[in-house]
Amino acid sequence: MGFFSGIMSTFLDYCYAFTHTLGYPSYGIAIIMLTLIIKLILSPLTAKQIKSMEGMQQLQPKIKELQQKYKGNQKKLQEEMGKLYRQMGVNPLSGCLPILIQMPFLIAVFYALREYPYDPMYQSFLWLPSLGESDPTYVLPIVSALSTFAIQKQMTGGQAAMSEAQAKQQKIMQIAMPCFIGWISLSFPSGLIIYWIISNVFQWVQQVIMFRGKNKGAKA
Image (tube, rainbow, N blue to C red; front, side, top):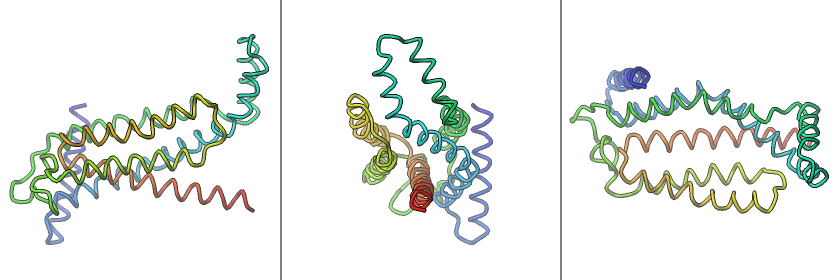
């Protein structure tokens, strides 16, 4: 990952140089620019992932019926579920590929921003004394937790009916994941947390657009 993190550091250098040419050198703005560029590049994969998740969610009631019908026959259950996937044109593994492709980008940005050599003259941003250090006011960790919660809430809000076990698991994750993100954000550099927050905001907007288009299509 050292090679990829080096590439991300170079891109951040270019983004920072761009803010310098505008007469307002800012690593904070450069990080936001880098985040938006990465999210725009990966947006088709994110859209594919969302569509795959929606397809699986829509099949949940039919899958539940098959599970009840063939409760004692796992072989037959697998056959019928395979037929259902083919009929509906859904691949249960298709949502994993976009995530796997995005992971190297996320890890590379993580290492690049965690170890980035900021110029001491411009390492402050807004209320933050240094983007290379954690937020002493705890504002960013709180916002990172809230933005993570908003993304999860948005995704589960459009889900089809789930089993009782799935619903309980989903409720636990809606609380546990934001709390975990907020907790680790307490010790991570502020620049990295800004990247996470902007990424969440971008994905939230993308999902709003996709869900809105889906609802309009359903009404039509």
